[in-house]
Length: 219
Image (tube, rainbow, N blue to C red; front, side, top):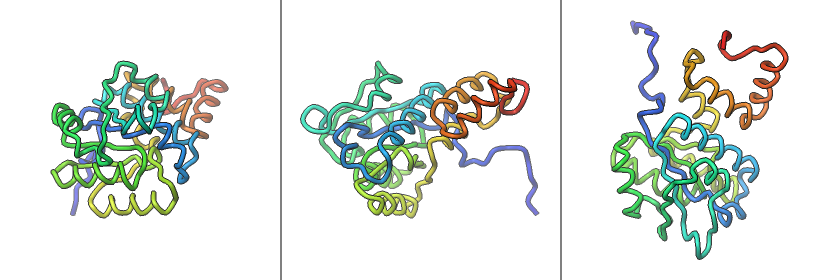
């Protein structure tokens, strides 16, 4: 019989065991995105960027043909990472650009969390490539988007079949926190959630304002 212990599962993410790669959250890529509302996509992208910055997760931002075609990154990203050295590429598959893989090697993390546009091209490519090379890979599916629901869903399905683990933006934030007794990042987590986590965030604001209540009590 198995023996239950109060320890987290080995596949749960922690702030220090992975790197985040945000791919092509750019104007031109967003114009044709239909699988998710663009305002929601921007919100979710801001959420995970703030989570990564707050928990000090090493993060790589990359663009494709920024000056000649695809345009600037979402302002939510440049606001969170104003000093970031963004890697601009010509390859649709970011993994085929040595500047990207060199940075991944410098991160020295066996786990990668990836999100961006479009799911079926610029996310499938690096995810399948990273898996082939032995990385454990996660995809934040609601910070990705594609030209149709079909394109997005088939891409997610393909990545899952290859071994990638899907998660959502709020799930990513809360998985990094994972215990409300962790006081050092409690305000960070609830602050991000209050701003970006929809009804859950409004609930946090309400409970704090009306009753001075908090997640886990006693904060």
